[in-house]
Length: 277
Image (cartoon, rainbow, N blue to C red; front, side, top):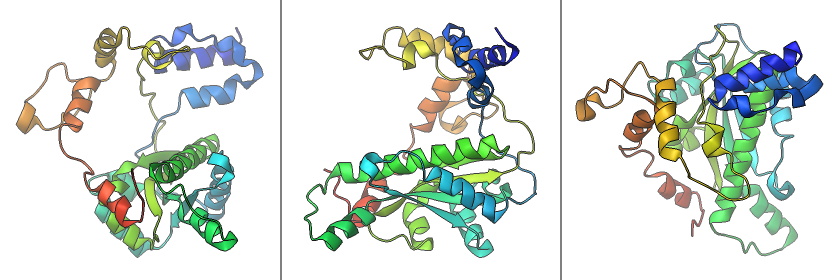
């Protein structure tokens, strides 16, 4: 085992409690960039140094080079460069300090409008006006966001996706002048990290990596073993559920989704012209 493949193995073991089952030697010469991927983490504290506009455009071009369903290219990126617009978006997002600290903010969008424009241009009927039209565009937007993150981190930048953009989807859409059939998927805070991100352990591969058929065997024990690896300094909704001395991942996520969140997103998408049946 070389030093580089050993580093990859250690990163995978830190990421997954059963990561030792992954043979990092298989990576060979590619071990170093793969280690960066295995050890990556979201950045929530940034240096004040700006990110050059030309660099953001380069990273956006790389992101938009990512796979897209049937070459339909149903994703767009909005670079937020106007200070007043940035402040208004920050205010909508709420109590997430990294959105204000980050030197750059982008919004990744799903775009099913362009496909409909192509149909009108070529005089062809648009007959697939159902849930898949939204789904394809949303997935395209997510793929582009992931590609941007990987490219940015390869250059030493840090990123933090911001799903809270969808908490105020209509207001964000209005601010960005998003037309019918174009919608925000997520925001992305980008900047130079103030500190190296920590590896956030993931659920073990034994319950998230399947062979041939889906299986939930051992899921309860896996979560019980995983929870001690994920302790949180702040507990959600203590006024409703009290303090939990063993507060871990499963309790945090159960509390998070015990309260209504984005219940109006479907109505927003219907106002955007999507049929979700």
